[in-house]
Length: 404
Image 1 (cartoon, rainbow, N blue to C red):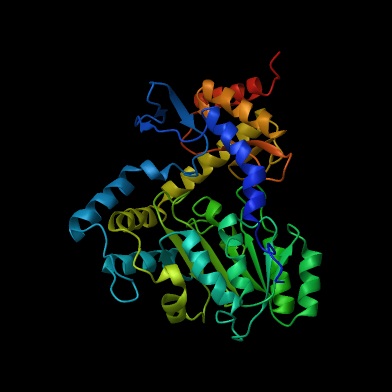
Image 2 (image 1 turned 180 degrees about the vertical axis):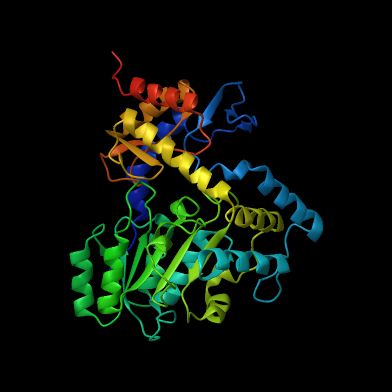
C-alpha cells in the first residue's frame, strides 16, 4: 500500500488546530468586520476602535496618497479593471513599465505575479523537475522545516517530480550532508520568517559556491524594509548579480504597500518557460489594473529619500518596543515580535484582553507554531506614533500579568 501523509497531514492539522481557532473566534478575535476610520484605527460595528498590530504594511505605504493616486490614475487611463487574459498572450504596457522599474531598482530581472503564493505554486514544480536549474536535471529538493505554508503546500506536487526532504530549521550540517551525497540539491526557505528569525543567507551562499546549491527564498516580509531600494534582506546580501542558481520571490502586499508578488530571476533563467509552464504565473488571473498603477507609484517612491526615512522610523519603533517588552525576537532588527505564552488558551485570553485595551494582536498556535508554544504576534510599523507605541507597550505588560 502506498504510504500516506508523507508531506502533509490535513486531518492532524484540523484535529489539533481547529479547537484553538474556535476559541479565538468565540473570544471575538476572528471574523472581525471593520471600517477604516482614516485616522489610523479600525472601527467595529459597535463603535469600538482599535489599532491593528497585525498589519504587514511595515512602512505604512498602503495608505500613502501617491500610491492611492497611482491606482486611480491607472484605472482611469486604462479604462478597465483587468485584461482577463493570460499575460503570456496579451498584457497592458504599464505592467512592462512596472517590471522594468523594479528590475532596475533591484538589479535583476523581475517578473510581477498575482501573489507570492502563486509564484511558489508555479515555480517550485519547475525547480523540482530540473527545468530552472542550469543543468536542466532534477535535484533533491530540501524544504526548511520552518518554510512558510504557501511553499510547504506544494511539497506533494514537487514529490511527484523528485525526492523531497525536510531539513531542521537553519541546519547547515544537515544541508551540507545532503549536498555531499547528491550532485544536485535545491533548498527552499524564507528570507525573514513570519514568526521571526532569518535564513542564514551568507552561509547558504557559501554552500552554493562549494556545491552548486540552488537557493529559493520567499522574502515577502522584508521587501521594502531592507535595502536602499527596498530590495529585501536576501538581495542585500548578494553582491553583484543574482546567480542563475538563485530565485527570490516576495509579496508586494506587505512592506511595498500595494498588491501582488514579485519574482527575482538570476541571469540565464528561462523566462519563457516560466511564462508558459509555471501554472498560476501564466493564467488569466493577472494583477488588476489599479494594483499595477499603485505598484508603479510605490516603485517610484522606492527611488526617493522617503523610503529611507520610513525604514529609519520603523527601526526606531522596533528599538522602542524592544527596550520595554521582552520577547524571544528582542534585539532582532525586524518588525515581527513574538511574545511566548505557552498554552493556547492563555494566548487567546491575552489577545482578547489586549483588544479590550485598543490593540489587535494575533494569538498564534498550532499549526502556525508547534503545539504548546502559543504566543502573541505583534507587527510594528513606521507610522505608529510614539504615544500609541507607549500605550501598546503598557497594554502588553498589563495583559502579561495573570488575572486573579
